[in-house]
Image 1 (cartoon, helix red, strand yellow):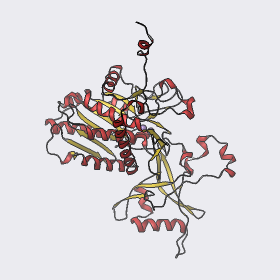
Image 2 (cartoon, helix red, strand yellow):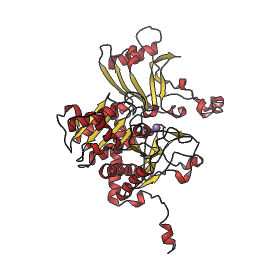
Image 3 (tube, helix red, strand yellow):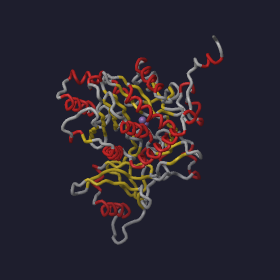
Image 4 (spheres, helix red, strand yellow):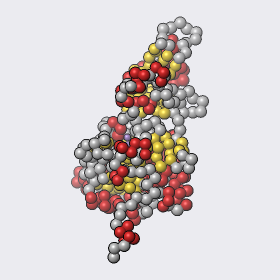
Length: 468
Ligand code: MN
Ligand code: MN
């Protein structure tokens, strides 16, 4: 019979997380987000994230794969690749040839890298030259407090870790911007041209050496300070990896504290939810894998990105230790039967920029994990387009497990676009779906996510690991 009630049932409706979860789940959500904010503060670079993730994994009973003799169902192991890329696995009860379930996220974020020869003095100021990494809006990086994180080597060949600008009494750094009074010309430029890449120089000093006559005294004083603190010289910069990131910590946003505001949430929000879920699963049927990759923001290239053979090699080693051998045929079977949630953030609909979104196919902050059949730019270029069959299976699992989700694509057609690791995983020949937490101000120094969506990402990965 046609009634309003029956007709209403025909509609696809999205749900608001907060009005659809019970009080105890709301508490669980808030606790999870508190822990997530600590994770963000402890891991502002891919190296720091790997370190933090290993520490957490070991606390949850994971062992380094190379330290294990034999493997059996229920065992938890991890593989590290060059300190920037990590794979964790919980071995399932089922034969591994039936496939593995992978949640993959990236742990690199847009930032400013120091150039290899960065230090110079100009007009009594010492500055560091940078080369930006990933897609940034350059103007967002001026006039905010910045920190330096990374590694370099001393003259004696010892690696030192550098982290300046995070502790309460640490100095911070910044990129100065032109005062509005003199910025008439700058302000009339296109946003993309107003701040040039070559002018993203970090202010690190303004005081010369006190007791010695030397040219470029301010620069020499900076070198001297670094030498005393870390034993490094100017040549140490040449092989260093030093990353400039915002120095502020993750914060609650809003009077109701419903959002998390922080640097680096793309894609550490999905990385954290993925870690949390692999730590919480108990005796999965299929082997569960959490894959954290580097270099997504510059195209997944290189030996720590998704295009590296690391994942294939780790899976092959896992098969060998588990079953006694691994040939091409066996490996291919595992991969063909595997499934992956490519977990990366999506753009959240922004009321300040309505014109850039197509509302009917947008993700909204607070309406759950965003599921994207495809990403890409233009005519879906550079996208892995998930099959109807696989997407249907995934949505069934989400519905059965009370996961609040929403379907979306990244903004209006032809407004721009973006990619994820999905296509590189799909190229291996397995089913992949893009999904993740919607983000406001994505790629900015202060990205914003809704706590309800973070919690739903965790629930989605749990459901995926335990049910597919
Ligand atoms: Mn991302
Ligand atoms: Mn990104």
